[in-house]
Image 1: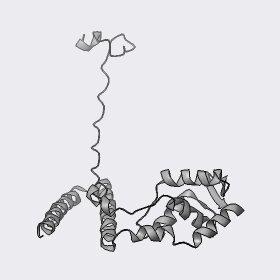
Image 2: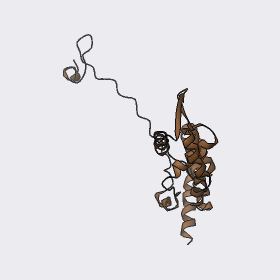
Image 3: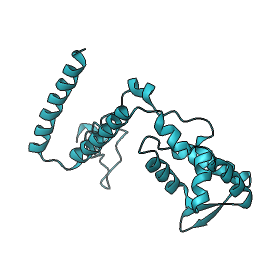
Image 4: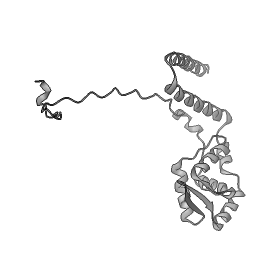
Length: 192
């Protein structure tokens, strides 16, 4: 008889003895993904004003019917990657536009495609007279900071790919490169 036979936490076997459960497999370590650009960059964050999402959606829908995801992608592309509105800002804005009778949404194939109503088209025409919101937002970030953010995002993408597919030799080489890069960045900062 084993010490665990009388333990109330283990289920009995068909023979009446209790058996400790099999140990759980080891949990794989979480990949350490580089953080989004440091909080210190927040002063260089794009400045999106109240109403910019709404205006952008109306302008895009004046071109053709689209779903929310397409509009998010279009805004990001037209702002040169500076502004990618979150689904949490786009979908409530679309719902508000629908509630106001400016757009209608049609469900098809698991996606909801939005189109302007006549009232919405009139509202969009007024938006077309002003500068496009994505151009305004893109202007709020200096070009060199924008390029730095894009490079950071590309490095993040490469890092994620590395953590999923690299062999041991590649991991060692990448760690060495990252250590050297970190030292180089601090040397640049120390020059002032």
